[in-house]
Structure formats: C-alpha cells, structure tokens
Length: 355
Image (tube, rainbow, N blue to C red; front, side):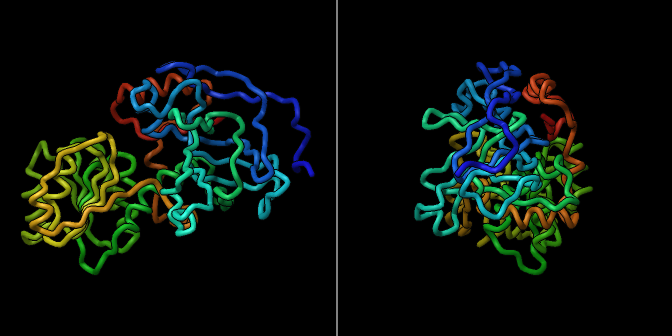
C-alpha cells in the first residue's frame, strides 16, 4: 500500500546545504523518500539554532558537510506513509529534534532524550547523517510529530524546540513557595528559562549576564532582578537578595568554567544546580563547595516529551517567543544571516528561515 498524498514522484525540493565549513549554498534535490512510518512536511518556518551556528565552521564535529542543517521547524503535512495513524494531510505540525527509537530501555522509561539510537535532525557526526529542515520539505517519523493549534503562528511554533529545552530543565527540580531561582546566562535558552521558571510557580527569578540589553529583556519577560557582573559582584548581590542564604535552585545556561562556578556559589546549602549549557567539553568547578554544602548537580539534555506542555504554555501566553525573534527571512537569505550570527552581531537573537 502506498503513501497518501498528491502525485509528488518527480519534483525537486530546494534546500540550504552546508557544502563545506562556513559555506552554505541553495541546491535542488529529489524530494525525500518516505518510509511507511514517516510523513513529508512542507516546511513553513525553521529557526537557526545556536548549535547550528557553532557547528557552521566545522569545529564541533557535528555538522560534517554536506548537510542540510535545521531542527527547529514547523509546517504542514503533504504526504503520509502507509502505516501512519493519527495524522492527516494538511495538519499543522511541529516535531521533536530528536529521532528516538521508541524501543530501548531509556525510551521505554520515557527518557527519549537518552535513547541509545538517538539521532538529531540536521546533524552529521561521523556516526550518522540526518538531514534537517533548512529545506522546502523534510521527512520525519510520525512518532516525533505534534499537532499545532491554529492560533500558534508557524514562526512561533519553530521556537517550540528551544522552549522544550527550558521546560525540560525546569522539570529536573521542584519549586516550593517562596523559592528564589538564579539563571546564569540570559541568551536564548536563559530567557526562555526565566519564563519557564516563573510558569512553574517560582515567584523570584534573578538573571545574571554580561549583556545589559539581554538583562533588560529578561526583566521584561519575568525576571524580578538582574545582575551584570561587570557592574556589581554577582554572588554578593544574590546573597543580599536571599538573606545571606543563596538561591535554592540555579540554572547554568552557558557551559563555561566562570559561569558554572557562579551558579554553584549562588546556590544555598542543600540546593540544586541544573547544568544546561554545554559550550565547553570540560569545565572546572569548586568541588569542595559542592561536597561540603551538599549541592545537587543535575544535567539537562534537550527534552523528553515536553512538547505538548510547551505548546500549551506558548498558546496561553505564559511563555512569549516573539520578543526573541530578530528576523524572519527567506531560505535564500540564510547564508548571510548565518554569517551575521557567527560574527555575534550585537542584538541578534533568533533568526527564522521561511523556505
């Protein structure tokens, strides 16, 4: 039994292809072939992730050319594999960035982000190559699909993957009445974390960053206090704001030695630190401070099925992504915007490509 769709046997799709480090080209190729459990999605919006930018120059080892990057996307179903159930042509959907097997011990426990066979869309790392969504069409397994409400624009829906990283991190801990949380790093994920922490019931959130504009945005999005370490001692200020105790929970969203140390020192005795940032493969941290103060460290990787909750939070307005979108541009303009993001142009946050 064949797939359900229009006759698409002989059409070509346009993609933005990483052909060599720091070189992106528009190319045409045959439409993706579907397996029985996959759907073909007409991509309406796809965000440029920080990991795409970091891998753009070949240094990460996870964007080996040739590759179609892109894993933050939303669109419309235009073809359905023979064994797919629960979805129809024309459905507005988004999808997890992680293609998980659904069968290993971790998947059976609901920890799909730890799947033994885990592949990430738009990644090529030597072990596998899985093309992503910087293209007019992308094929994905139906098990990673989520339907979108009509009220959520595609450009916002392309941010659900990033929101899910923040919501998953918040889910690693529990909050109690009167808790104070610290978010170290007010980049994209940090700003989403500020909102996710508030949505989880934490009344006071302190944002820490070196960029004053981002700190201002953090306060607009729910941070009750912001600290720029260039202007004041972050730890002293946090202790003053918490009666000398420190925060019960700190989130580190950068992944470097200084920021990890700040998150740990900002946390009270018996508190928890959630490590989200992974910029550096290794960091130093104050071991004795962690041990003698019984600080609990949690790693937080990607997400594990939080998409429906993220869609609800975004649709209700509890998490706002519009202030984080710097530009919405065509696929053909993608290469130039990659260069601007790679150069760390001031003020740039999320860029959405519209194939």
